[in-house]
Length: 188
Image 1: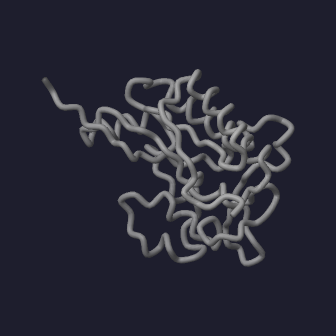
Image 2: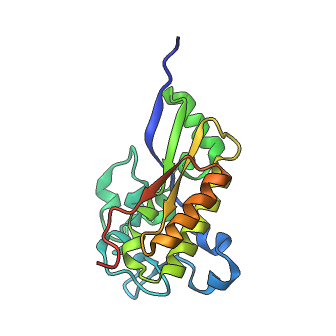
C-alpha cells in the first residue's frame, strides 16, 4: 500500500478578469475587478464599491500571492501589484500539476484567495450568489483537465440560505467535492 499525499488547503489565485469573463451578462457591469484609487493603490471593487476592509485594498493585494516570497515588498503599499504577485501554479492547472509533481503532492483541494475576503463586503444576495457562481464555474474549468488531482472546493454565498443550498446542489452535480463558507461576518 502506498501513501497518498493530499494538500487539504491548496489555494488558487483568481485571475483578475475572472468575474468579467464568468459572470452572467446581467451582472457584468458590477463585476469584481481590480482598480487603482486616487493614490495609485490597488483594491478590489465589489458590487460597484470600494471595499471597507483592509484586506482587499491599500495596494497590498500582491501579498495574496505570497507563497514562497519575501513578504516585505508584498506588504509595502503599491510595491507589488496583484498580477505581479501571481505565480503560474496558482492560475494555470498544468503549472499547478508540475508544482504538485515536484513537491510530491498527489491531490490538492483548491480554495480561493481573493474569495476569502470579499463576501463580507457584498450584502446583496443576488450579486453575492452570482459572484460565487462565476468563481465556481471558473474553478470547475480549472480542475477539469485533472479531475483526480485537482479538487474543486466551491465557494458558497452566506447572504441567504436558499441561494446557498441551490448553489451547493448545482456545483455538486458539476463535480465540486466540498464547499467553503466565508470566515468573515456577512450582514452582521
